[in-house]
Image 1 (cartoon, rainbow, N blue to C red):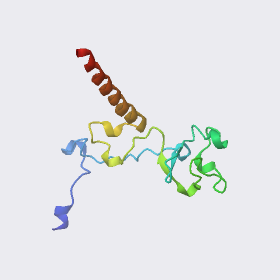
Image 2 (image 1 turned 45 degrees about the horizontal axis):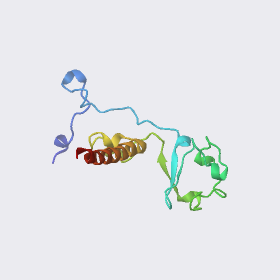
Image 3 (image 1 turned 135 degrees about the vertical axis):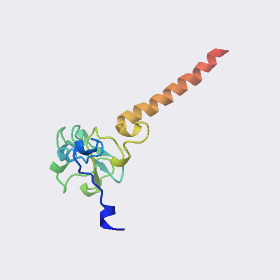
Image 4 (image 1 turned 30 degrees about the vertical axis):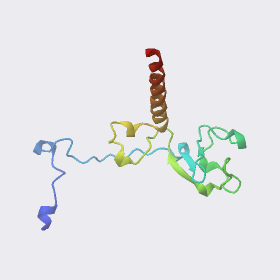
Length: 137
């Protein structure tokens, strides 16, 4: 294929027939403060949230994970070292991969807490409906 055919004109001016949707976006992705990120223990699934701290081991709320002493901090559940934790992002970040967030009837944009309410609320509604069938007698 020749180089002239491979290249496409995506930088055309809006008045030259290009629409706003076809223009590339130049704004950078939003960067969040790493001190507000939550960290999950890969061994047991414990999530360290800096907004909550860990009362069990005396870590006050508002202490970022990066401020913890790597030599003395251990997971309060399984006693794993700091190296066993991975960054899972801020609290209100939707779960899943960024490229998949536009699929799934909007469910993929929900936070994990919102997904829990949706799932367990559906279970409660199904149980209530099932129990209401006993009143049809």
